[in-house]
Length: 286
Ligand SMILES: [Zn+2]
Ligand SMILES: [Zn+2]
Image (cartoon, rainbow, N blue to C red; front, side, top):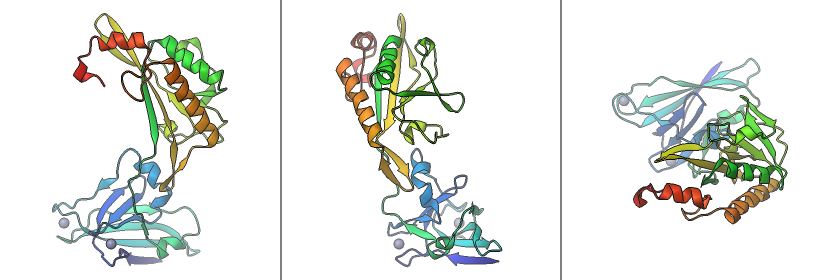
């Protein structure tokens, strides 16, 4: 059994600009009045998928970018939706670019038929994230890691290749490339398997240092990264209170022990920064 629906914005318009991520099966359609709607069940993953880049805006081969959107539903024997083909029809030349299929592997599915377009006011919200950079010696990184694991009783994780709890070892603090370390004040029931787990879970990341060649040696720039909010559906939620106080303590400790001469969100060892600053012209400093 199949059924087709022509998408219509709540204002009545049926012409849309369309953004689709075919792999992640999420899409956004926008009418010329600027009403945005998420396509089908895109809300479930929208914030997660769009944190680092926006799904591609679809353009017809004729150059036009306004489409009619037709949804072709295929049903299972029990009447639930199995999949939906998203067909676009160029309003300028009537051509139909290759369609995208949304596979549906859950029930119930009636909302996909009742509400194929799901209005969203602000589709491009970004989660609040913190990035602190630090010109350090390896011993500074070690001191910070020891503060997190000692005073703040954090657990340590690293990729092997999946995230795994581990102990820190002396080898973690060399000037050679070492593995990124993740710190958490809580036991994580589910470890994120994504590329940047610190964006999706209560984890503070201490990166392997960037090695910057300077006359007569090497400077090491460390990144400390964590999120204050994490994506949840098409919204964000605050990190759990334990992590909020943990990350605040960590940031306060960095402020108390290192220098922010280079700007907010920096925590340099002053001697290391002096070494770097003397060789980088003022207008090229970051
Ligand atoms: Zn509209
Ligand atoms: Zn066209």
